[in-house]
Image (tube, rainbow, N blue to C red):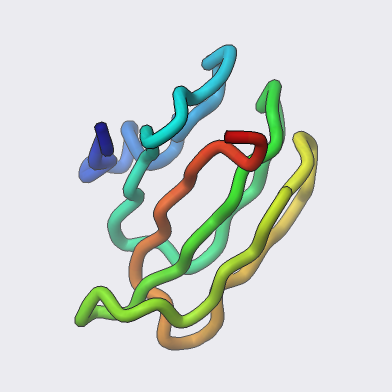
Length: 85
């Protein structure tokens, strides 16, 4: 199941506070072209998408407490999934 973070509050919280993501689950963050993994407990994969939902960048195995991961100028949203699934 993929959850969608639409509001500012949902986007700001992201996956913070979760123990893990199950295989096949993810969080789609709208209006987003960069992320961090501060306060997270597990590594993630990030798939950055443009306005037409085409993949523009994939970053794998982003460790917790990473300060900045940028999807590029064309990125408009990001799908976060579990790196170890």
